Length: 153
Image 1: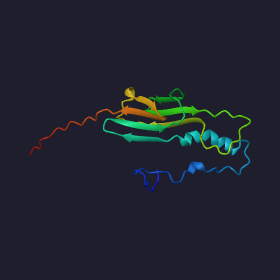
Image 2: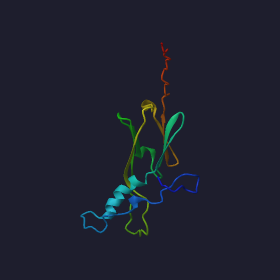
Image 3: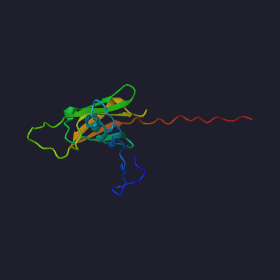
Image 4: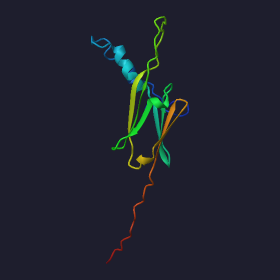
């Protein structure tokens, strides 16, 4: 989250992305920094919004160019919602000349700890126009029974 609010729709935006830097670019590692950044860039670029309504927790993930068959949504026993998948690399033709490659490819995983009021057995997911929407219904919060105690004396 940014500390500077966006002028577009009141939503906050990331002005500084710490993952865009490559602190290892000048070190002589056996794996090139381009290969390492390509493997992790899909994870970094998978943006997810999480809002809570009176009825449910709603997650929206931007997954452009990914089919619903390539995405997996799971809920683990310890109340962890996991979204994972893989964006495949575009096939290269030896006659093509690439001028810029900005779209990420590779595996991605996002995990979220669900609150106690989440109904884990009623989670639903839908994919439309490259946006994955996951709805986690909420249990009604039971108000504690309050019993008045008479004070003697």
